[in-house]
Amino acid sequence: MTGCEGNMTSELRRIKTTNVPLHYQAQFYLRDLIRNGAYQPGQKLPPEGIFAEQLGISRPTLREALYKLEMEGLIVRKHGVGTYVSRFSENPLDSGLEVLESIEHIASRMGLKTEMGDSKIEERAAMSTEADGLECDPQEEILSVVRIILVDAKPVAHLSDVLPIRFMRKRDLGSKFRGSVLDILLKRGQPALTFSFTRLAAIAADNDLARQLEIPRKTPLLKMEAKLFAPDNSVVDYSVSKFVSDFFDFHVIRRIGK
Image 1 (cartoon, rainbow, N blue to C red):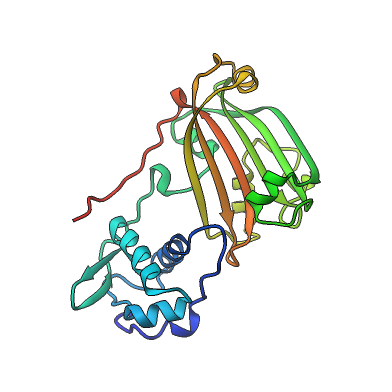
Image 2: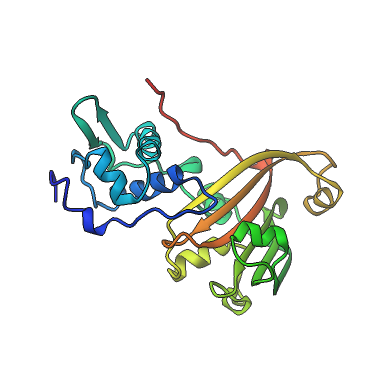
């Protein structure tokens, strides 16, 4: 469908309202379309007015999403001519925070072994903060998975995931569960996953975290609070991860704006 900017009209889904800003949702959705080949390198995208209408968003929201995609190098905007998929879009960023992956995969690339330490796994009613994170009804039944991750026998991360039980039950983890909820979801393929929205913050270890991670109190930690979304924009997983900064070197690759 190279060069045909109108063929995708009937296949586009409209962006829905959630707690994630619409321009981020549009950015992630369009990125997936490009990377999955719905729009080919060099292909011209529909005019902004038509494109925004197809997606059910305003033109300013679409422009913000396109600006972010341009910064990623996935599209090229030519003033007075139009917006085109970059001819370099077939080589997406595959490192740092651009790609969502488990600690197990990160450690494996470095030749390190991960293990799950102390853990607490239970099915129960959601607490208010968890219901907010999952964007679900208060007291919805959830699966809570809290655990310490070890790398070469050293505690390096405190991970907490909560999921509605309609997406995962305690029995689904199996007897060989080693700590990665994400890997189980990806391997199972259901529900389908579209994108993760993550907030980053620097925090200091309190007494409880210091004890569990075997570090001094007030040691700097990197906190990642993330929501993992399905195609219908329901939150599949709400996670809060706290990493000992000495063991992780997260990075982001960014283009320089003009």
